[in-house]
Length: 399
Image (cartoon, helix red, strand yellow):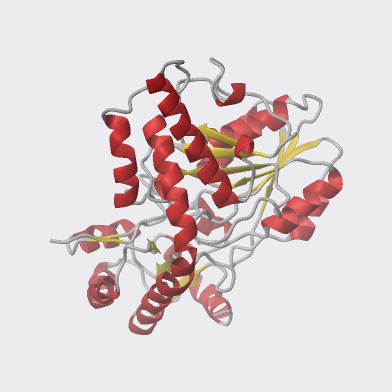
């Protein structure tokens, strides 16, 4: 049975071109980029070229790129840098819908004496920038807001948030793990100090990421060790991963138009088909400012895990929310923050597409999912007349 993979916000397949670029690094090109001999020199050249490719894809200078092991490391490093560089400032602003790589750091800091403002979102998952402005204090050390939400796909106004930070002299960090490769990003025009991405979300392998640090921004190494990454991140470079993410960034930039045309059209057809064929369903998130590949949709009276298990029998891979929060019986923190009623939040699915998906795969989902929903509803202990109806009636006018 062939796999229909619609879980690209969790991870992506390694692109064949990326795999081909990596293979020599697993064979004859095994030198250490720090070594003085010819083999090391060739590795050093590959490292430089990968850095240039990533910088070109982001619209920044190569010396502003720090290679990391993952998005989580990048987020931790950026937050750590801003706080350790300003020990007299003990306040941070973030949101209630961040990825755990930021949210759990903020909670840890809160337990250790920092004040953290967690900004809420409205029913469409949108931030209120007036609330952000009102939260700023003289001792605010950092504003950390994700570029696009991994569950709802909602894209946040990062340019405006960066400008607010600039006005008040506050560093701004954005976790752009879900945004890179899906929407254009030009750091030459974007007023942020730190931006993070992860290789395995853009068809590179797991275990490699990027932290952009704007020149002259506050910085403290999170990983202490050797002189690698201009002293900003100790440890011998993961050269196969770095060469892979360099190639993946080239492909991502070249594929932006396809993401925003063909992939978007497939996503919209999936959404329209499910909404027309399944009653009591609601799309989560802002329909206007959303990633082109992401559909979060909630079905009343259903358990998301049960849907996933039955879909898996047809080879359909999706998610009931963020992969980093699965395994918990609690509804997603993102959907809770958006005010989605209990009867819907447990039955939420996230479909996240890529350039490797086809129209035939969308047809298969539209054929198999409605009967699965119907079957599960017949087994559901829930009954009509609960608190969720009013919310959906109010919400549906926005779509």
